[in-house]
Every structure is written in structure tokens, then in C-alpha cells.
Image (cartoon, rainbow, N blue to C red; front, side):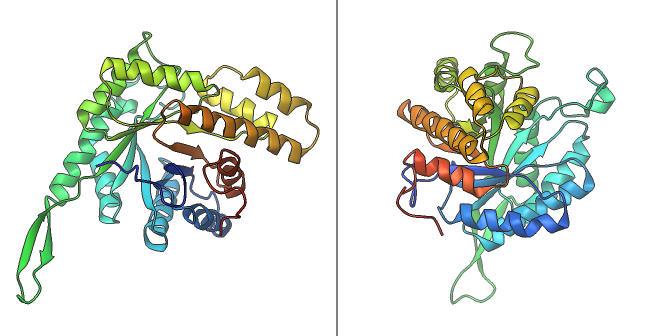
Length: 318
């Protein structure tokens, strides 16, 4: 099963990423954003995960809010770097017990200065191993479900359990720590073999980066859907930060346009227009949907979808 569902409000499946609030005072604004995103019936809303105790609890709180207060599938990010098998299994069970059935399995980045420290890196060596562990923990936790039989008190019908959906990351321009040119595609094949049902790409700035990557992945044997991850970038400072974190090449035209535009409204228009054109181009090239990094702001991503023609341009969403 895939969590990419046929569209209803939108012309194509869309999904969003948000992150847990950093302070208690930020919950109300985030929940307003989630309500506005949920109104267009996305396939899922993913919530990033922080390894620290407070961030972990905040992630789960946001996920359960999505599960209980909306009709949208919540998708939980999980990272395995620095975790023992027991710690990772305990965390997975905690999320499963809360009702979460969709995950994004990530290896995560090693802490600064511990790249070669095997003990600090933990028991799980790859996202593929985390994919396998998620599936195994679910099989042990809920091997089947029981449905009551109407009219027969105390009787139940045993039904197959709903298998978890497990998304994984993909890197159109290669992983920054890849040791050879095709290692990121080999890693994606390993994740697929481990049981992944969906891939979501790191952001990219040119449609050809995504389309050429998908073609290479398909030729290598990757069959799972590969969602393009797109981020509307509306300020020079955010663009610099994104380049620093991802190692992507600076998109010259976007960088220049953002630098020379003197107003915040003008920069927002530039960023939304650039992202909307990227959405249109990858969809024309066969993308199965659009995944938008929302930065906990609904206005920009919904404006991008309107400009791209994915949601009605003449109607404001609720």
C-alpha cells in the first residue's frame, strides 16, 4: 500500500512537512497551519523528529494532533544515528502505540566530531536497517487485528494487520557523504529491498535534477514512487542556510533575483513563482505528486500550489 492517495480537492496528490514547535507558545500557530493544510486534503503531513527528549515528545504530540483532529495521515520522521537496537525499537513501539502507521526512516547526521566513532553512531548502520526494524517491531506488536462479529457476543474475526507505510529519503544530486557516484541509488535500492514503500527527495532547484535522477533510479531497478521535495524559498538568508545544510549548488537566477529585490512581498512572489514553476515542470515530467517543505507556514506553500494550478487559484482555502 502507498500513502499517496488519489486526489480529491487537489488535481494531484500533495503532502507537506512541518516541524515540532520550539516553545509551548508556538503550538497554537502550528495547529492553525496544520488545519489550513489539512483543508486541501493532502495525502499526508510529515513531522520532523529531534533526538532530544523534549523534541521527541513534541514530535509525538504534533503527530497525535494530526491523527485525532484531522482526516490527514500523519507521517513520523525517525532517525537511527546514535541509537541502539533496543532504543530504536522502543521508540518505534511508542509511535505505533500512539496510532502512527506511516514513517520516514532516516539514518540522520552524525554529531560533529564523531564520524568515525562506531559507538557514537549506534547499532543501526543505515536507513535500510531502520526500515526493517520498523516492520519487525510492528509485526511483533500487532501481528493481526480483531474485528467483532455482529450478533455473536464475545466472538471476533481475525483480520490481517495494516502494514506500516515506510518512506525513505532520496538525493537527486547525490548524498554529500557518498563514496562513489551511484552510491545514493544503490542505497535507495537497499531501502526498497528492506521494505520501503515511498521515497521523498531532498530539495532541488532544477526540474532536470529530479527527472534525470528518477530515470537513473528506474533504470537501476527502483520501482517505488519517488516524490519530489520542493521548498519555496523567499529570502536570501534562507537560501544561504539551505545551501549550507544540503550542499546543493547555488541556483544562480533565484539567488540573484532574491538579492536584488528590496521588498519582502517581492521576494515572496519570486520564491513562490520559482517553486510553482518547479512543481509544474516535474509534474509534466511524470512526478507522482508534490511534497512541500512548509517551514510551519501555510501561506507560502498554499500560494505555491495555487500558482502551479494544483489547487484553485480563484478560491481561498478554508
